[in-house]
Length: 442
View 1 (cartoon, helix red, strand yellow):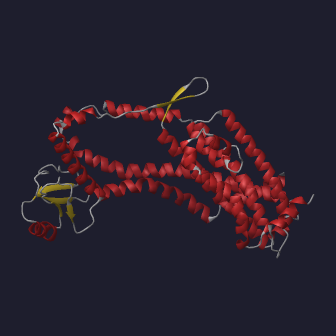
View 2 (tube, rainbow, N blue to C red):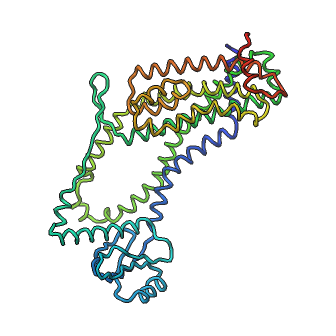
């Protein structure tokens, strides 16, 4: 046991001291924070580009129907098409919206002339205005007041309340649960493959450099394999927790440094006007309070303690299960090219679990989801996808027990392959050869 602990310590310290680990530990959170903040920043930056659109409406249906938007200004022309092009596009660089006259048909066609491709927000707004105006005129022609139709439209707010064991009611939100489900499953998949590949590569490097011959003269092959697997698992957990902490830190710094400054600038005119401050409404409207309360209730309905504990457990269980197989493959082969024939069948259950994300999120309590969350090779990903939706505790305990049993079984089988293949050089290994190793009794 002491020798195994020494190997765990060696694997852990040797990897966390590497420059690549330190760089990725810092760079990873920066990239994750950037993926959250950069789209919003770029959207604000792109919206700052103001567009002027000239409207040449030969039908007269849409005169003064286009209201100015935050980054779009409309003005109207009454010349012919060629003259309008000259005035707007050639001289000013503006856009030109041309709505041609129709004799009998409703004016459903329009042309937007521009030097550069207009944004989606521009084309969508123009389509919506024209569509609304034409529909209103058709309703009026039929003797129907458009306001009656508009007032008849309602929005349905559907709240889902999950009744847990003991009759406890908690509000939930399907969209939030689906997002958490996909995120948790993908992260488990990503970490198992990322750090499992390190086990495979580490074993092959030691075997090819013949260092392993010196190491196993003082420790058993199984102790070496377990020490390497557990050590790298602890490295993975360390990096994961550092990523969470640093990502939150970087998000806070970016938000305080960038968005808070923009917010203060936008509020500056209001702070300088006592009249506006005195006449201003309460800072939070009832609708905003309702939305805030709803979000708070939804977040309270998610058991984050179970989520975090389950993630740690299923990451460790799934990693130990697959890492033992990766270690066996690394010990059996001499070259990277030889690993492909063995990696494919080992990886298929994990890849298949990710491919089932649509089925799991649409029917998290269905029989397919339930049975796949019991199978040790698929349970790390599938169960993490199901937990945000609420899973009975007996299913979690059953899945956990089966995963531990699967890990013990795969470790025993991988150990037999590892102790034989780790000292075998220059021989092309196939499935028949591995079957012989498994049948040997030690």
